[in-house]
Amino acid sequence: MQSAIVKTIFLTLLLAFSLPATAMEPRDIIQDSAHDIFDIINTNRADYEAHPEKLVQLVNDILMPWFDDIYAARLILGRHGRGVPADKIQAFASAMQDLLVQRYANSMLRFKSKDQLQVLKLRGTNTDKLTRVRARIAMDNNQWIPVEYSFHKVGDMWKLFDVTAEGISYIITYRNQIGPMVQADGLDAVTESLRSGTVELADN
Amino acid sequence: MNNKPLQQWLLILFCSLLLSACASNVPISDPENDPWERYNRSVHKFNKTFDKALYKPLASGYNKITPEPIKEVLGNFLNNLAYPNTIINLFLQGQFRNGLTGTGRFLINSTVGIFGIFDVASSAEIPLHDEDFGQTLAVWGWDNSRYFVLPVFGPSTIRDGFGRIGNTYMDPVSYLASKENIWAPWIIDKLHVRVRLMNQEETIESSYDPYIFIRDAWLQNREFKIYNGDPPALDYEAFLEE
Image 1 (cartoon, each protein chain N blue to C red):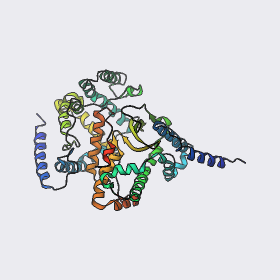
Image 2 (cartoon, helix red, strand yellow):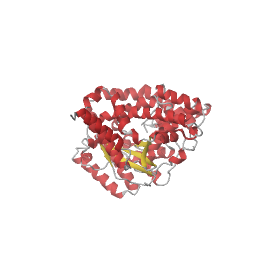
Image 3 (cartoon, chains in turn brown, blue):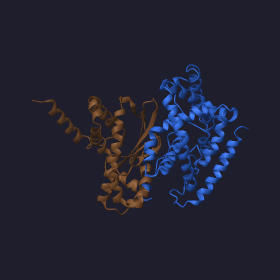
Image 4 (tube, rainbow over the protein chains, first blue to last red):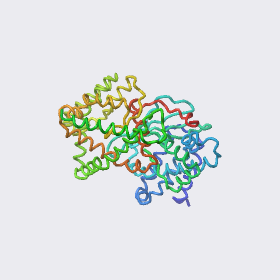
């Protein structure tokens, strides 16, 4: 009695356990997660258009296991993060990640075809510790936006920590906004206002 | 001759801004790239007022009354008309191959694309470059230049301010306006620039400090263009300490 639901659950579990275990190359991580997300949206497009909040869950499940939220948070905080207890960094990192996913998730609906994201060949300096995956994304008006995903190696796994669009880095952009806020109000207050959505941060 | 009053007016404006800048007392957030932050902030403020009062309403009006296909055709035409600026600067930077492809792009769009109103070169996957004289000055060695907000024109550096003077000779759209007094292409181009910014407006305005956001985004994007999309990797490890 292999119903479709059981099969789906089984496959999802298999996916969940098999993916992060293997040491995937950064280019494949971007390519595969983009294709997976696209496939899932495409089979239920009407549902996702009606309930965009489901996209957040989708991005959280597929892309975020690859994201090094703590490292990104430490880069954003810089000297403001030194000597801060790990649980406070974690709280800030989670709040930043939620914000990132919320912004990122809605734009997934703009993908109408798999060819809208092209992963390009590696260029420039790439070491066995740090690498930049180059890609380009087609916008509605036929223009290509160059995007770069920065990965670093944690143990034997590659983890994503920065995204750059047209040269504008996620880390730098938030860093220069968050720094003065932490200085003025303290980290706890900033984390709290990020979480409650009372403060808006600009991104690209 | 006709733009003399305009120049005088800009000079007066510039001086009054400098004076008002001395009065404010905000800490400087990025002494290395933006030592003139106080002056820059007052020009930024002036530009915002200018935008609200004139630039944005004109651009929204234009956007509303102009049908999409007309905007597309006009946009293509203006991009093509301005393209010699990119071609000349590709050659000035020693990118000869790209200069030749760029010339090909311009010729194809000007003929097959009927004076540039259809961007057939992009459909044929001929790459689109983006160069100007400010970038050429950077390639020639003026790679670090302080941030400098221009009245009306917005984000710039000292270098790119000088670059603009070069552009008035190399960019047919600016040349027609400043030397031949044919302003229509220049004005429509500036309206298109403003319309394109409308999507990002909300994010910019809702940011913690719009001035810093615009500055940092602009400087990063400028660096990206100067290095033709391949800027040196960021020193992330240093971020942990700074």
